[in-house]
Image (tube, rainbow, N blue to C red; front, top):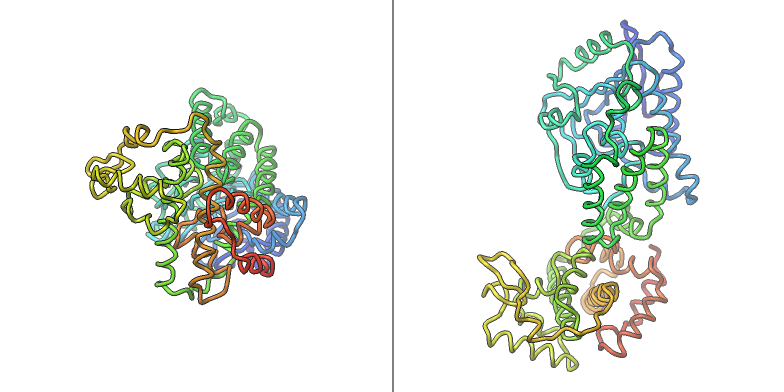
Amino acid sequence: MNLNNIKINIDDDDIINFIIKPNNLNINNEVINDFQKAIDYIASEKSVAGVIISTEHNNYNFNYDLNYLYSLNEPVLIFENITKLSKSLRKLETLGKPIVSLISGPVSLGGLEIILHSHYKIADAESETQFIFKNLKYELIPSIGASQRLPRKIGIEQSLELFLNDKIINTEDALKIKLIDKISPKDKLIEHAKEYILNNLIAVQPWDDKKHINKQPTPFSNDNLGYFISKIAMLHSNTSDHYPSVKTLISSVYEGLNTDMNSGLKIEARHFTWLLGNIETKSMIGTLILYNSKHKIKESEITIFRKSFIENYAAEGVRLLINGVTATMIENAGKRLGFELGPLAMADKIEIQSILPQLDSTDASVAALIRSMQKDKRNGLSSNKGFYDYEEGFRKHIWKGLPELIPPAEQQQDIGEVENRLIYSAVNDIFYNYIKYSELQDPLEYDYIAINNIGLPKWTGGPFTWVKQNNINNYIKNNEIYSRTLGSRFIINKKIIEVIQNKVF
């Protein structure tokens, strides 16, 4: 059998070679149908001893064709397509025949999901063979079983640590954590695969083996339940749900591992489908993955944007402090939004006097605070004291004398309102500089550099996308309210509104 994406042949030992052909496989309707046809064919060949999965181009760089998934429009269609592929691979996994994956070259999440369906995994000893985990905070969660199989294979905590961090795992480390079963010289891969198949003519995954099913990890064990509770609390505090893939992944693992594999796969697919339609996810995918940056904005212009952005962000934090918001709440709001630092820590980093160019006639009290701190030589990180006290360049704690200098209000604002102030001010600063300096009038390109080069949090998808996705009328209304009480930085240039209304995002 020779399909567009898969080639199948049967050797003299009645072993099927299942060869994935494309160099970089983008999973779309054609690929899903090819997998279904190939696996149906394998299931019909009752005399085969086993299956060896490999690739033609020595990599498992597999990903979903996101343009294809978004073209489906309806959540039910997305769910049906995902589960169609998942059911086909589940059928292969449960044939009772040994399935062996031969692993050469880099392995992405999509490739890992295919590999995890096999009963035995052999990686070659080449240095290029690595498992590449990207932080799913900015990505989509698994969709064909990795959130269910990996925790059952290597444990819950270890799996989440891989999914939620940027890590590259070499074959030696993969073997230690039981992600793979064997390392082999490249020229011995086929030999070792056949040896395994011919010595294990019946193969069952541990999550399907009635003798071992009680040994599978469960969220309700003492260790795992405590880990889930602490992890969820920490992530909520750090991300405030602005990066929904984190919460969705944990929910998928927690809910799925409370049930059997087939039910867990449906739970994962439902979470994936929901996540694909989430506003923050769509914003990040649109700007970071689907948009093809032209990289035509001059470095000198980016430098101007970034300098203004950082100074404005720090200044807004100090304004909030003057308005009676506690330093702790201001800093937590910045962290929850995903900025590099809290606003006051940023003010210290750039030196507190650097925010003076951002101030206007309504900010006399902010300027007075800065002068007062400078008299006490609290200039920022360079003097080891500013809004924070430092020791050898490391932040230790917020300056204990700050509440005496600027007493916090008895009634504190909601942290969501503090976050709104910071994000609106940040977006408006980029828009201001776009009107003043931009030579390339391409809002999508400025979205791209805003989150990759300037410092706007990734979940926004960039300033233009953020306003478009979150209702331009609300953006206008909220800025009008802010401008009446907080100043001219919340007055919107009409050209910005015209750009957002007239461009396709």
